Length: 377
Image (cartoon, rainbow, N blue to C red; front, side, top):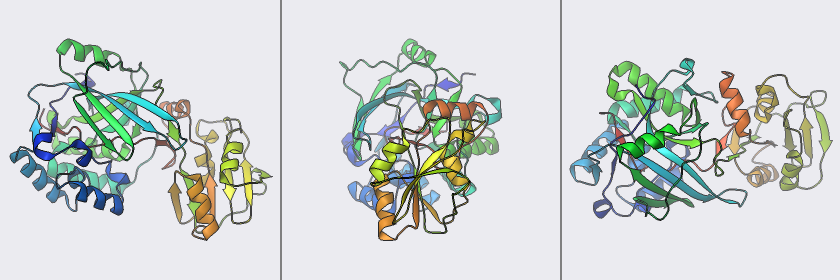
């Protein structure tokens, strides 16, 4: 039984539902109330009604109604899809990231075929499980990385699907010829590491275990090469409204001048064999460095910060936002960190370890709504 398989996609008929720009939506975990309201207003058929419904039953009813009305149509033959995301990152650099949209066989982590790098929480998994039970459809792909080469795309051929969301332009090319499918899949090298979508993967695995059918044995995923030039991780900084423990004696401390931007630049020069972070307070900016660690986790900035046992922690990808929160008094302090490298993510996963929550921010998140995959193959 193959690890990767093509699938018969369920997708929008844009002639009936409207342009994809008005229909696509991000993964559930980044849909804020404000963004959800904008997406709902964009189209009565926006995928957010399925991905982030008021109730799972509402999503099931909506999905059935859209299929009955011909707004969603099913591909007759299985295929894989080449996907390219064009985007500009928070660092101002324009990039393109390519991947392959496939079905991936669900395997428990201990089998060593699919590996996590972050821990999960029970609440989000339970919410995703309830949704899977109701819709019996894979609504948005999870993001995985592998050790094979980046796929090539003949850009002389127009994409079959194209749409934009929040500054990310996504193009997809259908690959339906059996020989071409086999060739595309042959370049993927395992094990597969989950970059984003741990909760959805574990919920799907639990659903498969309780359902017991082969039809529920795969998850929808985009697999991206570790060597892809567009694969990038950005940091997730920590902010607290609570008490800040004394760092003396635990870290080598260096007072810095300037603001968050200068501090992040200085932090980036610290060797990656040790954890470090910048502590921002209203009247001080301090670089904290620990001694080099012995294990794969011991060199991670987020591990060092999480061991401070902070209370009332919130997260942001923007150092400037963290700085503003401290200056305004919305946060007592901010802890600016470096993102793990791709090699560190791989090392943690292969060692069977997991990073703290919000250690990685693979940018951008995958856009949902282009392709759905019912649990019936």
